[in-house]
Length: 247
Image 1: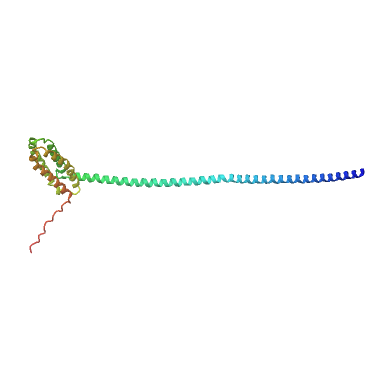
Image 2 (image 1 turned 30 degrees about the horizontal axis):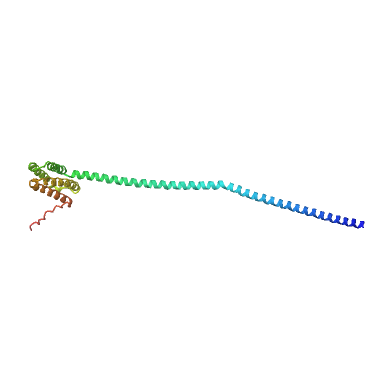
């Protein structure tokens, strides 16, 4: 009986030993597998790191070239914009210069025309512009001094004298050159408004209209006639008729 139990125990010990050996082998396999997995993971991590580092190094190498190209492109754009701006400024300058020169020529022509017109108001030794302005000034001064019938009667000879002065100017209207006609027309037009206002003020005074209105009407009519004549074209002289010789 004892031998039997001993035999059983020995058998159990053998089985346990075998199981233990099997477990150790299994553990060894698992450890080996774990080591291999760890090695593979480390290798994969190293490869990935090396690849990423390579990409970064390549990008770093390419960055200066890209920056230089971008700087060169920007410089070219700036130079192009500068050339365009320079061209536009030069064009604008030329245009402004041309316009200023044109204005200068026009101003010069206007001054010359005005000077020629003023000089052309003289016919011989007679200065029509000066004589006209003198007659208008005398007329206005005389009218400003009229305040009643007595002053109106005293002013009558002076108004008749101004009337004669206007005749001495307006009688030459047809002889004034085309270039000078606008200058005298402007003198007459500018004077008419002031003279008309002075006349209306004087004739409104009681009793004055009956004394001065006839001569004042003549003055106004002469101014209107002179203005109309200066606005009309210069009359062309009528050629003398041709006389056929007797046969």
